[in-house]
Image 1: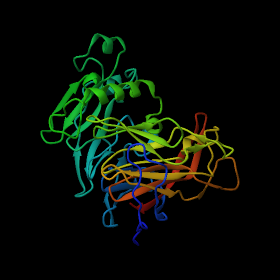
Image 2: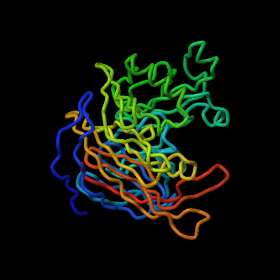
Image 3: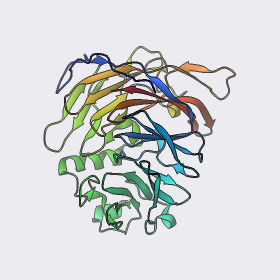
Length: 367
């Protein structure tokens, strides 16, 4: 794959910084049509062209790709399936084949995950909020999931609200443990200690109040990112210091394309960067959520504070009920430590629940 080099980058945007930022290079398409996509947040991305077809792995460090396994399905593959946290584990992906397993794309090895006690029986009546029943998130040291209430020691408030418990699978010892949501763990550290009180309280409140976590905030590695103040601003909360407010120009746009509309989408603070975009997703198409004529992807370097943005590529996608395709910007963003990624809608599906993404194209640009 040809190199996708950034132009000269200009340092910008620390705490309270202005809207100026470097402009990134153009995107290049690396996959024309995929049915499933996932990123580990650090180096690797994976996709399938059909729901149970071969899993293709793309190394964003060196641009190499290969096929690793057939007959499995990528889990957490589109942003509508993302729950409360983001994968940040080099080369590890949740798959179902047909049992829940962990795929190491570096070696192609599969590891079957143990069943969460009571999860299958309780799947029709989960808790009011918290992780969905089953394994959901891969960290550097643990896999996190949801377990039925009663599997952990809960407070009277948690029992009254019938909240799910948190299940933890230790990647080193292969043991499963359970804890209440009030002790939400850091799955990237040994022992999975609870998050610091400041972030734990904020995260649990966001989980409880937010119906669409993939659009409203992003959480990973003791950082929470969410829209702040006027359109374009993003607040990044930490354990050990005051929140950082990142100022970027423009937010999402209303259907008429004039007035900025918050919140920013797909906030993703994994690895060395925080990224987000100002476009709408496939499930928002046709409901007045925003315009498909505008959209940028932003990257904020968590170490240097450098802010870079890219114009998102326009793509023609099929729309059920129309004989001709529609051209615009529709999809969601992701990243690794080496590339920003745009997963652009290629075709939509519509039913009584509304629109959903049927197939996408994958575009990348070097950070």
